[in-house]
Length: 341
Image 1: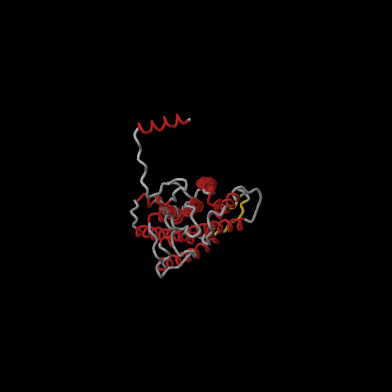
Image 2: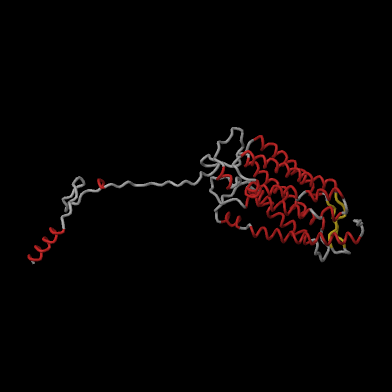
């Protein structure tokens, strides 16, 4: 069995931690470029900006600043204020995780038609998570190590770190269960794979499951590096999953609710808003969904009576057409005309 506290093991774990941070930073930058058409559609005003997108953009870009600062701490050439650097890293990282869970919460509330019985409990759990993770931004004691020319975590409140991981995982699990129940009550005949991928349930499962590994490692307490080695993958995957629930939505009109997937709009008829609901936005026409596209075909029935008779013709609509004469009569007419000439 490996000695997790030996200098050799700590050196290997630190090297692996650095590689993981750089790898997931590259993965997330690639993800942002892959979904950059969302921002471009907002700039081109193809999408109307919603107030709850504030949490989306915070979690989408704060994680970049957090990882960039963390990578900078690995390549120091001179002493700096490591405590301030790690405080900013924890602040941006936890803020991205909080806003990711909040984005998932808004998606679930919209699926339940903003019922107060769903909104109030989820809002309470969300505020509790914000309180815990906000306190978790200031649990590290970091100093500059002249020997390794890097910032070293001297101490941290491991118990509080573990509580943060388990609280985040529990809240995401609650959101996943409530979202599944909301999808089941629609009863639109979708298969399991359609619910999993088309309705975005896979993103809730990713946001929940990816926090399990850092939560378990924080309980095992193998060494200080292993306690943090899975935090970056968990944060990146959670943010990617939460952002995908919004960026993958169709570009729809200003009067629509972007937090309801396009599949839901086509398969579920519009329903009246229950009396005990809270609105996230005000719609102009009072409807929840954009009306389904309809094709109206108009045909014109044209009859001969609709036309006026020509003044040069003695024919009227009520006259019978002239009967054709036989061939002999027509030939005699031709001969008379020839002789006249």
